[in-house]
Length: 190
Image 1 (cartoon, rainbow, N blue to C red):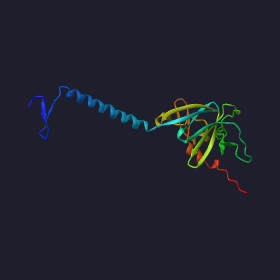
Image 2: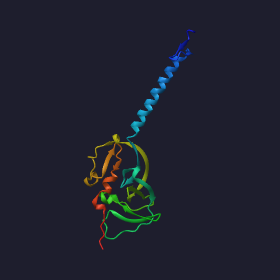
Image 3: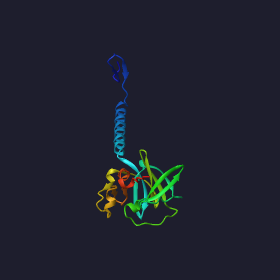
Image 4: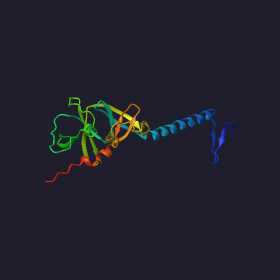
């Protein structure tokens, strides 16, 4: 038996390479890298995408998991007898969608309708509606730790619909609270 050889449990002899310590070092380094990638992935579980848009010169957002699509505001029909925050309805690919003007719901300054207005189609289960946005700004990835308390908001009516506010003053809307608001359900009796 050579000094560079080892014998395993079955009595088989194998060569010990002078590179064996370096190989173990490389494998340990790889294991550390893979473990840190796992930690990064678990940290990203708290991350989510937000669709950013303007309302009355303020930056708002909704989680993209609720956004079905963004559609240009073309034609819509006002509905008589509905609350002022219900702008009307529109036909999007043979679907009738209610358009919610949350500026009126939150008592924000109203701007006229322009070519930049978009409807953000929001969906939760079998319910959907469109939010009228003055302008779409983009998409950003965020985490829950990006938000601070929303006590600095001026409108109390807005506070109950907010998930949080970021350092750069993006106001993230809580879509579930909007969907569950009793004022958004219109009962029609014949």
